[in-house]
Length: 125
Image 1 (cartoon, rainbow, N blue to C red):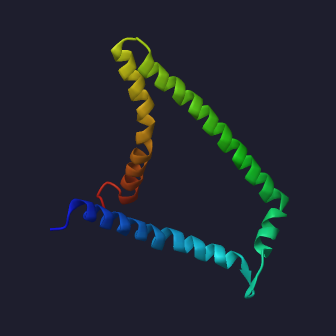
Image 2 (cartoon, one colour; image 1 turned 90 degrees about the horizontal axis):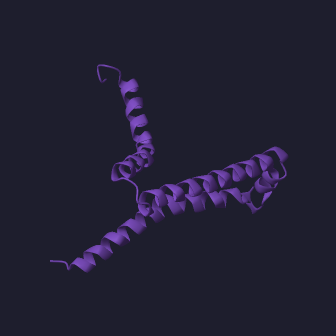
Image 3 (cartoon, rainbow, N blue to C red; image 1 turned 30 degrees about the vertical axis):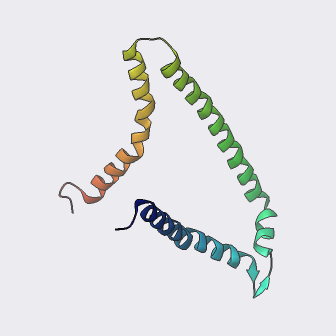
């Protein structure tokens, strides 16, 4: 019988190998293809993209919106967590607030279920 620590190490090694093979290697391959043009090292593709004013503007707009969304979400989450855990309100109000905060996490799953229902129809095929 294999000791527990060895089986955990083997499982961890297999997971790391899986990620290396199916995630890291394709990314390295794509990046390698992006810097090689006509068999020679070239940053031609990156130069084209970074000199396109529309793409650069879109990139910075995306970064600004992402930072704004992350900041607003973090502030709202702090106040929600503080309200739920650090105040002395009624327990039913805390439970209600906690439920209302957790409900949006179910939306992607519910949406996927509706998509499958519409895809297969009433008969299921």
